[in-house]
Image (cartoon, rainbow, N blue to C red; front, side, top):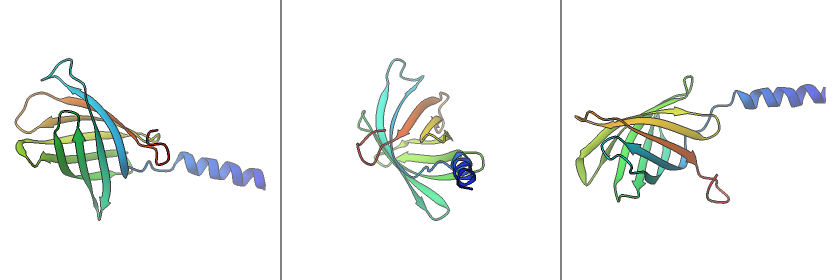
Length: 129
């Protein structure tokens, strides 16, 4: 019986949804600035049926946003804006992995290039995962 409980617990953990809430270390690129890698921190919090997104990056750009998470598809989509420069308004589409990482494609409104980024959840005890 004990072995069945262990197997059942293991199988449930395989099907557990990745939590998108938390603080993530992110890095990425965009084709408008070839060769430049930006780094930053993104924090996601559940706010009712939606999620709030706050980001700050190494190029001194910050953004706020609102997103929707589809747990069945492990997909997170959000809109964002730099409150200091509304020209930096855009959308991001993120694939969420069960290992607390996310990859995204994103674009600014009225632009023709797509950026890519990857994020990994910060570890609560050591600061990084």
